[in-house]
Structure formats: C-alpha cells, structure tokens
Amino acid sequence: MLDYALLAALAAVVRTGSFERAAQQLHVTPSAVSQRVKLLEERLGTILVVRGTPCAGTPAGLRLCQHVEQVTLLESELRRDFPGFQHTGPPVTVRIAVNADSLATWFVAAMAETRDCLFDLVLDDQEHSADWLRRGEVLAAVTASAKPVQGCDSTPLGALRYIATASPAFVSRHFSGELDAESFAHAPRLTFNSKDRLQTLWTRQVFGTEIPSPSHWLPSSQAFIDAALAGLGWGMNPETLVAEHVRDGRLVELVPDQPLDVPLFWQRSRIASSTLADITRAVLTTARAMLHRP
Image: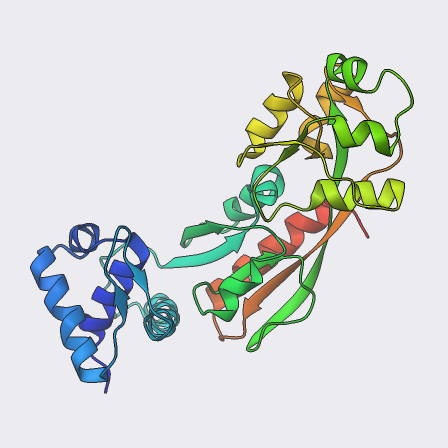
C-alpha cells in the first residue's frame, strides 16, 4: 500500500525543484521532507529524486508523481460530489505542456474558462511538448503531434498561423534587390531556441530548400516581435500578434500570401476526470474560435 504522505513530499520536491520550497508548500520542515523522500526511496529500492539545483525526478519518480497528480485530481472531484468530505486545501493543480506562442495568443483565454483548478504550465516547442506526456510529467499537452501518446487521446485544435516579418528598415537594408535565397542567406534571422524550426520550414516552403543564415536567439514571444520592430532580424511571428504592426507599417510581410500554418493537437490523459474534461472542453472551444482551420 502506498503511503500518500510520502508521495506528496516527492511530488512537491519535483514540482518546486527544491526540498526547501516543498517544505513551505507542505507546511513542514525541509528535514521532514527529506526524510519522507528518503524513506519512500528505501521502501521502493530505487532513487526517485536527483538532488541538485533544481532537484529533478528520475523516471521512477516522475511516474509516481503522475500517479499522485491523478489521485489528487480524482479525490478533489469526490470532495466536490460529496459535501460531507472536509477539504480546506487549495484547488487541485493540473500540469500541462504548451508552446510559448499558444500561451501568448490563445491558451490563456482557455484557462480563464476553467476556474475550479490551478494550472502548472511547462513551456516547450510544439514539436517536443508530447514528450512531457510520454515521461508522465503532465496530464495534457498542446502539441504538433497528431499520433496519440500511449494512454492519451488526441484531438485536432486548428492551425496557428505564422507570417515572416521584418521592419521596413531591415527590408531596405537586406532585401533592396531581389528577395531570393541568396539575400536570405545573408540576412540575420530570429530564432526562439535550438528547437525552433519555423524559419527553416518557411524558407523550404517558399524557396524549396533550407537556407542557413546568421541568427539572433531570443527565447520569448514578445522579444521576438520587439527584435523584429527594432530591425535586428526577420522571423516567423504569430499573425494575431503582429497584425496591427503590419497594418500600421511598423512591420512588413516579407512574402505576401505565404503564411506558415502549424497544425496543433490537444493530447490528454484518458484518466476519467471531470476537471480534465472541463479543461478539454474549454481548450477545444477556444482553439476552434481563435485558430485557423487547416
């Protein structure tokens, strides 16, 4: 039989990244948290937490954390259905993986439609967010992967539309002649991080080939737009975030009528949870209202 006081300590350490913050969350001492995690490791005969800054769960530890989150979710719904159960703690927390541009454009609106839980969001590229589900670290994810992760359902959301933009000064400086593959090879681009392939996908779509070029690295959706406005480089920005800048002439669409549509999918655990079902309804409704139809 699992000891849920020990499991709660493990989950708090992995979620907060430290024994000290986990102790604050659980209203106990860091020593007590450490003892509980150590006792659980001894009982199971395996290491569950990699001690460091921050602390991280091992594969076994992450699997147990997923179990704790699922049990906590189901217990919170029992308390809601049976008023006789006493519950004075905070609302249940649901951990979800989402890409930065979805968070900057439409996902917060979906969160606002679900008020009976807390959200713990982890940011990752849409090409990689499903990995969090595979590792058991989240209960749902906004992802570019249509194939369901084992134990999950996958539903199309629509496409997040990107357009290639730069400032008029940047265009005049780097694309004064013909806008071709050679000019793009010398013009600095903007790249979110090492997982960001949007600029590469767009040049392949427009020119039929990948075009290596110098790059600025800016891991922020807003900084991406600010850098384009400042004339640092060209980049792929969500259409909804730059529409006003394009309309007012502060940014220029490099190749008109050549957007890049990135299909997105909602993958969520098949756990029978009314809270997760409510989140799913809010996500699907919001996405269908704000994303493009593929």
